[in-house]
Image (tube, rainbow, N blue to C red; front, side, top):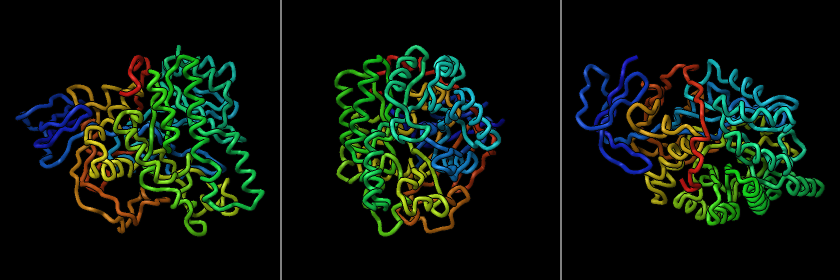
Length: 468
């Protein structure tokens, strides 16, 4: 396979920015410096552009069953969308089937990705049935390079819901197994009761999705999960933090010196409760969990990204079509499939709303989208860094014109897409994985099935401070 030499660009890392060339050969970065000789290698002029480590999206749901349907993006369309947004690796959630094993979940999701994944990938396993035989699987799971599991404290009445005793035991077992526990922190019992009461009173509109999942139930569950991890002596990662009260629980844990990682997502910056409360059934397009919040929460979330209480920015890409899927809840908001797309829009949203508005630096941007994700999830420095003989992917971007999104959607975007029609700042961009271009200026160049499984080792990140 031939190499690529990028010249004239500005390298942006989590630690700083500097002008340099980058030479890629045999799927590895072999040189970073100035005046690198091309020696017949294909040269790409990156003048006026930024060169960053390939973005990692450690929160996606491709071809995932949920609420009687399946997410509309499979591994072909979903990884194409991710590549178009600068992402060169995703970590998707493999769901343990009721009565199934963790190994079985990995096998099922591996088959979903086979011949379809355009970019590199890994898996978290969502534990839904913590039987005795499943408990013994955790060390072997880590040995396979699957270094993280997820527990849902929400969705009571479904196979996803997990009681506190199983969450606590998973935290205990994970400590020795070399596995990081991720948690969806919402109080499932309180939500179920509030939903029941809303429906009894005839409150069926999409906005009641948020009103029955107020910030307090997220904050309570976040604090509870963090304290259980403290008792277990284990690190924990709270996914999709949406509100200031939940973030306050994380900040307090950091002040105590506890290892707590935390993620937030673009929907909590781009949209708000007002979108969920749109006239008629339009708000169903914006149903996700935790729900969209009042805009008053945003300053705290931006500050969390800036100071390190929130270390990563994931998409929680979970796409459903409006017709035939979101409409399942036309008469009952609890039946609306929960989720929004975002794998493509994630980086653009953070750049436009964060870097361009002066809320975070370009280096914090790279940290949240790439370097911190690689470090926390055990893929660093193979991923998340631009250093010789390390990376398989990086990103070239040139901040550019404003695109109103009025044009024809490419194939990977033909799904529910609330952003379409809104102002989204885009850039001319190209994505590189394994030494060749997979995306350039609106066109997918890579081959589906070329993405590779990336083994991760969470034990390598032990001792890493919570504020990475």
